[in-house]
Image (cartoon, rainbow, N blue to C red):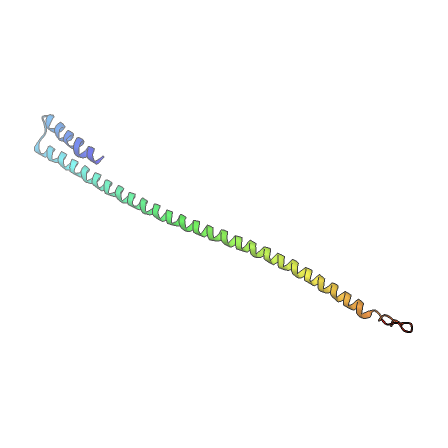
Amino acid sequence: MNSFVKRGFLPLVIGATLLAGCATQEAVQQAQAAADAARMEADQANAAAAEARAAAAAANQRADQANSTAQQAQGAANSAQQAANGAQTSAQNAAASAQRASEDARSAQQKATEIATQPPPPPTRFARGERG
């Protein structure tokens, strides 16, 4: 756009004004001033576009950094979930082992109670001359 204004439009306006035959010095100066103003606006537009491109590039970079941070956080969350699952499995195994140990202890207590409440066996009597 800027090159069109500088190379094509400005000479065209000045040439058309001069070729019309009724161009005065003042008309040429006005045409030149209008062309200069258009050129300045085009330069300002180019500068604004360059700033916008730089801002977009910075925004893209920040978005990439945020995405990287989010991926790291997701990885940490996945690791934490795996650790939690492992801990839950270990806790369930420990609870099952404790239940079995409790049942074994109860069974042993019952056997001990049964043994303690049974009367002792009668003494064995041997016939004369026998030894036990």
